[in-house]
Length: 300
Image (cartoon, rainbow, N blue to C red; front, side, top):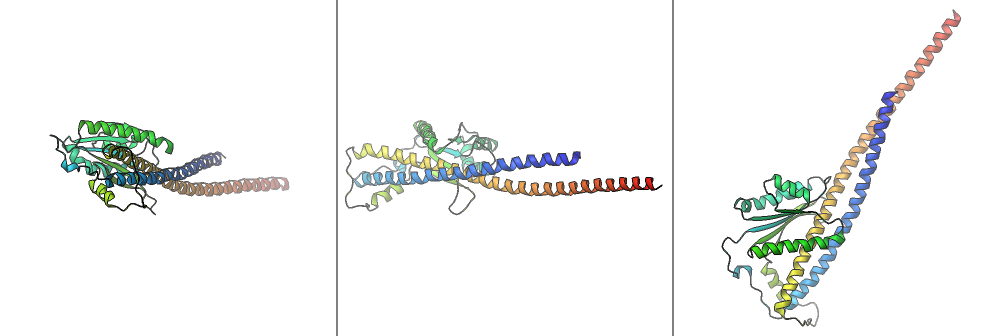
């Protein structure tokens, strides 16, 4: 029964694939929570940094708004960091963020006023296919613990951009899962220049306790250090949210694949049972026909 043997091998292969898909789905589910916890932890850290900024601004420091700076000739360029993935099997995760970024960045790219970096080789490939070739593409961290090193490297790259053009506006593009929604959606965040209205809001916000903190450094020295920590927190949360979104998209893709595999297995098993029954019926008929032939020859 060569046909039945081939069906048995196909069923075994599809069953193995189903096991792999289930394992990938479980890993994605665990990874989602890992990166969501990292983002939640950074939310608390960002709140602490904002309290520090509030204390410094409450001491009378008034940072200059970006509009107060004299713009250099050729200034006003855009810098963008686009977060995607290094691996596939996550649906339209990279396509969506690349298209979303391209809609906002094409005018700047047409005027040769764009600096672009991709975090995730799949996203970099999609940006290049859209006519936006990243000047640098770097890999994503493989765990929540490795996000810190990635963010520090990104800050160094952005520092180099700002040293070359202090009037550069730096945007972040990434996918994040909205609350109560399983599918990640593209988002845009302005990293630099920091919104002065936000600092004004911090300065006017009531202090959460009766006594304000004291600090030994001068506000003019402490403020840039706190702003850098604020930028670190924004980049860290962006990276963690993007990674959580990637694994969320992959888990949904694996769920769809698991349903398709289950349907395929059901179809194969039904076909196997039918053909096996037909084969058994044929063998029984052959036995009965042989028996009747033998009985007839003996009677004759």
